[in-house]
Image 1 (cartoon, helix red, strand yellow):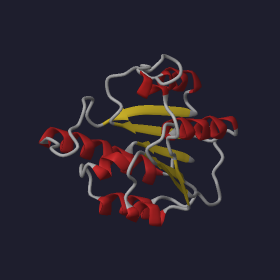
Image 2 (cartoon, helix red, strand yellow):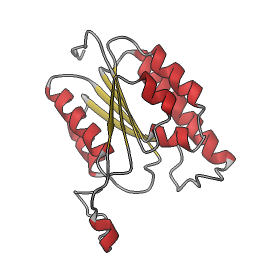
Image 3 (cartoon, one colour):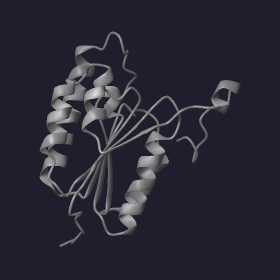
Image 4 (spheres, one colour):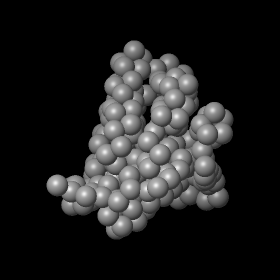
Length: 180
């Protein structure tokens, strides 16, 4: 049986904004937590078809770090999400509810959940209810652009990533091991 440390009081963190680094910051936090014997679960929404390096890292750090991709695997049209998009996001969110409320993890990261809310795939009120229902020891991190005001208001820490300069605009594609 695995034992893990629990925080006396978990907090809610939000990483949002137009700049690069929201997922990367949450992964850094996950790595730090695993280094202190915390049990970590990351659910990635809207990350679909790319093979991300963090998935392989999680396999190597299992059972302390679990990463699972949930929701739709394809691009979601922000203004015209399909019924399939809504259903897949709902199923992923249901899994997030189970993970958060189980209390089995010290740190839960819901990567791109802010986008799910912004796209209207899951009601903001449901996300706020999840935040309110988390066990006291669970540190909860929500990432993604356009964090809704209601979620920001419930958070203990909010970091907004602001793009100053990005090589993507000069035609640089995602590089294995750096952006993926």
